[in-house]
Each structure stands twice: as C-alpha cells, then as structure tokens.
Length: 354
Image 1 (cartoon, helix red, strand yellow):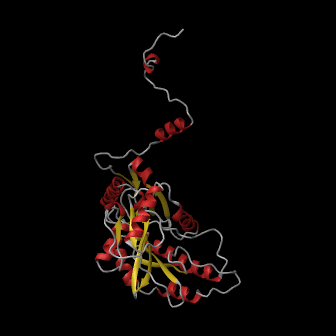
Image 2: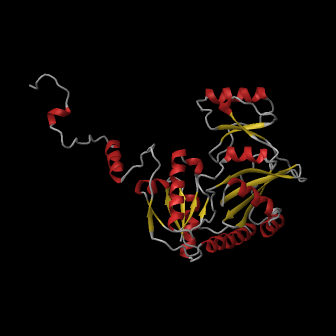
Image 3: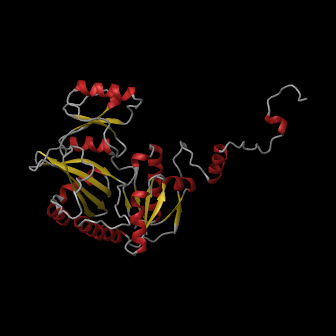
C-alpha cells in the first residue's frame, strides 16, 4: 500500500487519481495529511510519498522526517519518496541549479536587499503556483519601483523572490514548456505546452474541437520518446525529489529548470477529453502513471502501524477533536463553561447585585 501525505488543505491534486487507481485496481494509493498524523502520532506502515513542503513550517518538516526515520526503522523494505529533510524547495533549488551550472539563471530573496546581477527579472512568491507579482522588469530601477508598489499594496516581502528570466521563443514564435513526473525510478512525461506569452501556464487553445491541433505530432512524439531523460533525472536527484513534476524549457540550446512541484495536479477528470490529442495524451500518461505506482507497491512487512514522537521542544500545537469542538463553539458565540470553578470565582469582584 502507498500512503500519499499532503497538507490538509490540498489533497485534491492526487485525490481523483487515487480514487481511480483503487476503483480500477491499478494502484492502491491512500491519502493522509500531516495535521492528522501529527495529532495522533501514529501512522500506518507502507510505502510513503511526502509532499507539500512549501506549505509546511520548518517544525512540521522536522516532524515529518522523524516519522520517515521511525517508519524505516520498523519496516526497512518501505520506500520513502521525498525525504522531508532532504528536499530542496523552489528558491534553494534555483540557487543550486545555477551554482552547479545546470541553469543559466538564478534567484534572489527580496528581503535580503541583494539585487540580481542580470535583467530582466520578475517577482513572485517562492511557495505558491500563482502568476508572478510583476511583469518582466528590465533594470534595477524598475525592480526597486515594483517593490515599493507591492509594499504600498500591503504585500510583505518575506518569501518573495526576484527570478532572472531565461526563456526564448522557438522558430515559430512560440514559447514551449515541458513537464515530466518522476514516480520512484520512473519518469512519466506529462505535457508540452505552446504559448505566445512568456509565462507559459497552459497551452494555447484550439479554435474549435473539429480543427486539427497543429502541435499534435510534436506533443505525441515528446510523450512517447522523452528526450533528455538523463538530464531530467539528474535534476530530480539534485533536488532530492523522487515524486513530483519538473517544469522546464530551453534557452541558448540548454535546458532551463523552472520548478519541481512535489504535489502537482494529476489531471484525471471524470469527463474524457474531447480533442483527439487530449485523448491520446491521457491514455499515454494514465498507463505510465499507474504502472509506476504499481511497480512501487511491493510487500513491506513489519508492524501494521507505528508510533512516533514530535520534535522537542514542542513548537506547534496540532488540534485534537475536542479542540475543534471548542473552536466551533467559539465561532458561534457560545461561552464555554469553566468546569470545576465556583460561579462566583468566574466574575471579577464588584458590588452586590440588587
């Protein structure tokens, strides 16, 4: 059995795939969340995939690492994908890739006061998947002006970074962004998007479902052949990530890695894609995705569950069921009774009532 651990607010990227895998007997993926695990301090034994490090505090990452170590002590045959203490998040990964010569761009923390060495750049939060806060900024003066504007809008500079822009259009005038999953020892190609905007979040839409997709042959060839697999795996290894999706492009003839997401959306919607390319993409990805998880799901042995401790000193409180009941009572404005105290002790001294 494979346990997939997410932040309690974000099980949805993998939830549909997990349900489909169990329903169709393709892979046994069960969902857990950090808050519930840390509250109970008991975990089932199996193979584990840790995710969502950008949504965790450093204390929670330390607690997850203690869980991973306790699991491997009790069941040495268990696979732990994404060891919590080893994963490089976005900013650290971009800096390492630049230092190791694997990227031709780097990033800087805004609140450090250090300015980028090259332009253009853009400003973004380091731990979300939303659009950048700014358009491309072409000089230090533009960057400083943008920072002032963001601060005036009430946005904190903590965890905001300036990222050098490094991408280029292809001969057809379009940008391309590639995406590949890693699941254990396998790489599973996911997408090749084309767009005329420098920030490639999705591919351009077809004008109609009847119109042939002009990129179909290129996309299908990429999904089937996956060029540069060795270079892709090298970047996953550097990041300490064994489950996730890498997003990358090319500039100057070299691969440029933009991020590796440890809890990417797995797009298994109930409705089948209507375009021919969409159907082919889904079939290729689905087969390889579940085959990779099935390969991972080997017998583990050991006890059925384990106890683990939280790091000391205790820096965070994880709400129990009674805590949640009290919070609900407080939200609706009902005063919680103070059990064990005399009524007169719950009021400040004052004149007698008449």
